[in-house]
Length: 417
Ligand code: STR
Image (cartoon, rainbow, N blue to C red; front, side, top):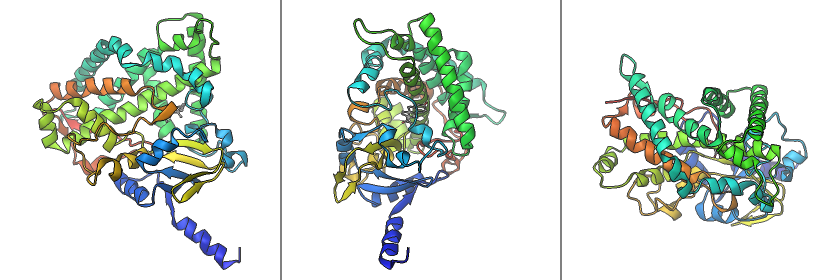
């Protein structure tokens, strides 16, 4: 290109692009840069350009805009073959047919049974099971202390609990939990070579398909069996659709709740006055859960939606075929929504319940109530059993995993008190 204007226009464009660094340790710095870049920011995801939404109000609008769809075939860069299955983030988007990837009336058909099974009322029935899992894992935590008293709260507590819960709901045998944890860890890590990631996704497909066939032959009282059975007079989900929903439930139910529990513990340990207020009963655990969801979102960036028409947002235009990410961490720190001190963790904040961390609109997280029940049981039980719980290393030494879409810690070493 020898036209100087075009070149400088190109440079300007690149100058405004924020590269999402898979190795980033300073996540607050990344969040602040995205917010400074505006309502809509141009980002680079491992060489692939996309928009991201960084503000609460505009995200709320876009999340109900039918011109934005989840169908990967609406993506220009996919249609043209620029993005292929060789791109490390493809598994976040091209995940098979499920409630996660389909819109409109088909989406309602795919999602109804799952959301009905996860209402706060229905969840009361499994509360005793979650409490039992929690107590068992607290015993395991006690037993796992090393000679120096240090134990990894992630590996021994925060990670197995959501897997036990989602495993019970979906009918995944305990003997498979460690395998699934290992596979999802490799799936999310950007250090995993892409051929290995594609291979593990194929293995998981076989695993889930076998499970669906088993439940088809011998239905039990789990949600997988319920998804297989047709409504009276209704048309049943296909095997592919049941597998897709099962994959989405296990992946989402496992990964995100680990983050919620650990992020809450971390926030409380670094804000001891607030921990004291909660332990003294001055403020409820629900406040801790909601403020953690706002301030330190388990999902940093949610991939991806595609514009089926040009969509104007402020002074920018998302062109037909372009991809849009929702940056939930930036949205939680929106000063217009949460005030000038949005970067501060404050469980007494009046807007703590007005976050959008579970999304909004038709795709709003169907597991939101479940994760609130899990965290609402796990956190008080943990601090009830170990009131002197503290970090075994300085907070700055907690390292993030190389995961682009989640705020994932490598380990969370604690002393039980
Ligand atoms: C992982 C791979 C898979 O087999 C199915 C899904 C669909 C649901 C996705 C999940 C994915 C990745 C993690 C997600 C989850 C929905 C919510 C969760 C994006 C692509 C997070 O918010 C982290």
